[in-house]
Image 1 (cartoon, helix red, strand yellow):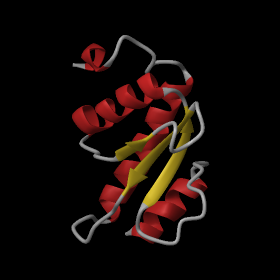
Image 2 (cartoon, helix red, strand yellow):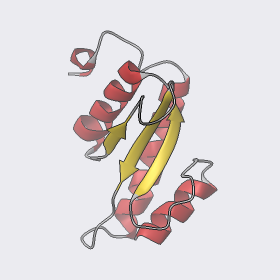
Image 3 (spheres, rainbow, N blue to C red):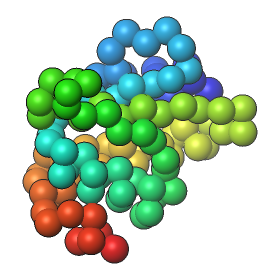
Image 4 (cartoon, one colour):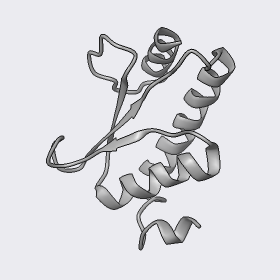
Length: 106
């Protein structure tokens, strides 16, 4: 599943760096607040859990999300994740994740 996820994300224009494992980083542009709201949206509204990495581990205004597909995931899960990430990226670029905090999404 990792190969399908990584290939699909790359083909959809996502920067996933040069990963050689099932851990799949996805690099986006945004600050801590946007990253927090985005990951909350992914988890609570789309059922996708990913870990979030922000400054100082990555440069300021870079969000790194880490996805880890497992043996219980299937190609339908991969497709759903890719389509959801496209939507979330569009929302991020439109400034929809800027706000007071995760309370705005509850």
